[in-house]
Amino acid sequence: MTEPDIVCEGLVRIFAVADIEVQALQGLDLLVDRGELVALVGASGSGKSTLLSILSALDAPTAGSARVAGRDLPSLSARDRVTYRREVVGFVWQQTARNLLPYLSARENVQLARAIGGDRKHPERTIELLDLAGVADVADRRPAELSGGQQQRVAIAVALANGPRVLLADEPTGDLDEHASAEVLATFETVNRELGTTALIVTHDPAVSEHVQRTVQIRDGRTSTEVLRWTHTDDEGREHDMAEEFVVLDKVGRLQLPTEYMHQLSLRERVRLKLNPDHVGVWPGDGRQTPPAPPAAAGDAPETRRSRREGTHEEEGS
Image 1 (cartoon, rainbow, N blue to C red):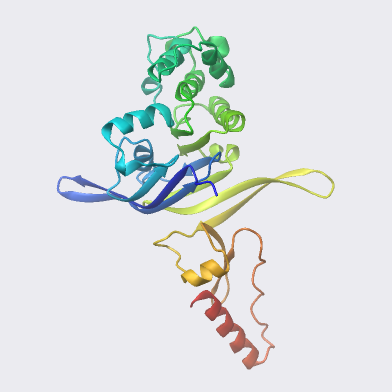
Image 2 (image 1 turned 180 degrees about the vertical axis):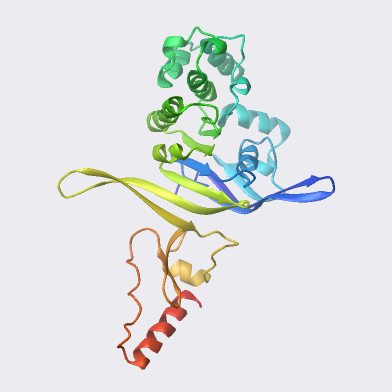
């Protein structure tokens, strides 16, 4: 079985500010499979940017583990971190000034990134990447001559210059209007589809959810819920966009079930919940089981009601 491209387990990051400890990440768990396009959403201060800093090897966790494309990030040396950022991950910042050199054209920005990565022999690849990002027609313009959306799409081409396996983006549409945001998000979709690049986009933009396969919400330094999206074809051949929200089952958890029950029912990463009058129903989130039967009707015999309650409590570990 192929290891996910991003694996975070029990990730903790504590900052000391004026003799006060601030816990930005509090045991976060996250899996992103190879080739997935995922959005990470959450309020300011929830830990999103801290997580990206760790995944890009610009920061190190206080505790827990983080692996990206098979690399164990906390154990990387300073030299390995440079190689990792140059070859394994690409990064797109919100501020275009951090993505592009203002005195170089779009073409030259990509060429420079490729040269730093060691490839100076294939200039045609530069135009291929700009074309993939939809900005080949402005290849000879400098950033100041480009719109904000064009700058970000050039930034995506730069981030892809050395063929990274994982693309990380921190609020890439934060400074853009609705139309430009849609173009940038469509570019991420194209890159994911055409190159198979795994992408994790941190954002406040609700429109991002329409362009990704999975939306993960982070709250108080932990992943809390996920929304999965897929296309369903009905019996008449019509396609329907489907979405369903799940509660994340983490390993320290906001929601804890006995390990043997998790294994027996294959409860992993996400589950369905149902609030009943006297209990919360929990069942796998992969569609292999249907929701539990409704509570007993008022006319049932007391023995039947008691038996159902006891059975439900035993199954759920109450």
